[in-house]
Length: 402
Ligand SMILES: CC(C)(COP(=O)(O)OP(=O)(O)OC[C@H]1O[C@@H](n2cnc3c(N)ncnc32)[C@H](O)[C@@H]1OP(=O)(O)O)[C@@H](O)C(=O)NCCC(=O)NCCS
Image (cartoon, rainbow, N blue to C red):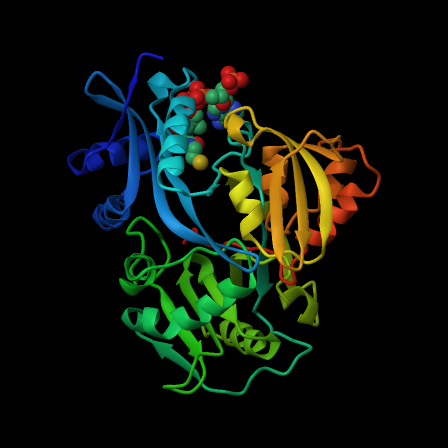
């Protein structure tokens, strides 16, 4: 590789964005560029320079990622782009190495991302750790649900008021699920408050509806847009319980001059498909790996989450890109917490870091990966025992891409 890896100064951010729009075949209007620029100013920025031209770019946003029992410092990789003239020469590989160095220096044990193509990131130790599904509801007829909707008032609020009203409920949802990002005021401002979103999007502005009396904590909220073909697109819905969710879905399904409600990302354990009385009306249109996760510091990650059951296992971890994680380690979990240290004892499970990363939040079972031939179980029952310890009440979920 003849390129030179450097931090990208603020003055080069527009050039980095030009590269990203080139690589992703995007045309960005002024509002979108402004929003992207502002997001990048809050990120670590790594560039691959060929002479003075930026030919590779990756941004790493610092955030807290919810994990079972708490949260850990993480980076979210975004805007990962390599010029079409410089692809497949190791530019991304070089940038990933630089990002790992920065994660270590900043003490960030987790990295995550949304992948444009599933084939790219496994080699760098990422595994798909959360799933999401998409639904479409035919709303040309009334939506029939098997639970009674919460009767509290539904209020349309100004997007500018969203952070104050929505953030407390969002934080509650983070506390019960892994995979959810911390959001600061700048995030809410970029994602919701402006209300206009992408100027290249064909949908209308964001609308925010809250369930609950004014001044009382929200029992649920939905952020949505109405766009082409009279379709209501749900950006995000958070509900405290099933009646609150039923109230919000009923509201969305009854908006005049619309024919369809579409949600692009719901949690895999979302109640909607269960309480929909007519599953032909509420169709699951896709199920897909959502957030990809990488345990950058395996020991720190494993000893920092809560566990559902005791365990005593020897893991042989393979990690081609971050060798400090590789080796044989004993994981012991008891009510006082987890310990993880090198051992010479024989391994019960042999697994690659990408597969351990996929299972870490409790969304993927180790024994599914044993059956898939990806994890080797040398001690019978070891996978079941690790699964019992990893299990979480709610499945991990991330729905951040709006
Ligand atoms: C994806 C992208 C960043 C890869 O950059 P790159 O510099 O070509 O990647 P590298 O040369 O470092 O590739 C490293 C390895 O990953 C493989 N790889 C890279 N991109 C791949 C892809 N899209 N599909 C399958 N394999 C891929 C390479 O073949 C190479 O494998 P090898 O080590 O066995 O030879 C670049 O093609 C790009 O900008 N694509 C368009 C934007 C995009 O999709 N970005 C990712 C956003 S999540």
